[in-house]
Amino acid sequence: MDAAISDTSPPNKRRYGGVLPEERQRLRRAKLIDGALEVFGTKGFHATTVREVCVAAHLTERYFYESFKTLPQLFLATYAELREQLMALTIASIKQAEQTPLGMLEPAMRVFLEFIRDDPRRGRVMLVDSLGVNDEVAALSGATARDYSAMMRQHLHLLVPKERAAVINLDLLADGMIGLNVLLASRWMQDGFKEPIDKVVKTNLLPYQGLLALVDQAPLVPKAD
Image: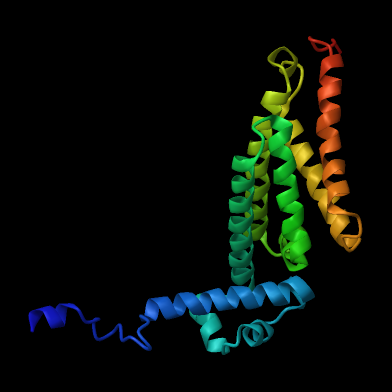
């Protein structure tokens, strides 16, 4: 009898269909994020209502407020989910790539471009609306850029010889390169992904290939003002 009692859920954690309340809430939260991606990604954050998200998620508004207090909170969760997916894909692609600086950059760029091309809703959330929701979302967007910038710095340290790095601010360069890649991706998305992805990848890589050539010509010491 004792064993039977210990194997049952507490009275306040009744199972429905064999699923605990916490798991049901997690599943509802995931549905809301899926619904948010659909509505945010097609209409945009500022044109979206709680009701529209709930309709897309096939849930009542009661369940929205079970997990989120506001639409910006839901947007933040949606962005965070996309960020996690993209980072996982990026890391996996780098591990399988040729272990050279340019060899690792190419698949990482391709993954990012494929991520927004295969589901343009992702691009709308991550590249367009993320900058205009609130400070918290903008901070997460900035953190994502810094994560990629950190990876970029690692590549740049390998691309730029030590004797040349003394006259180059690699931190600024990494941030600038990431900004360039994001702008190119945004333009590609705005144009309806008309250009073949191979051409866009090569275009994204061109500044890095040009960097290698320019570094060889850079002076070893900065010129005096």
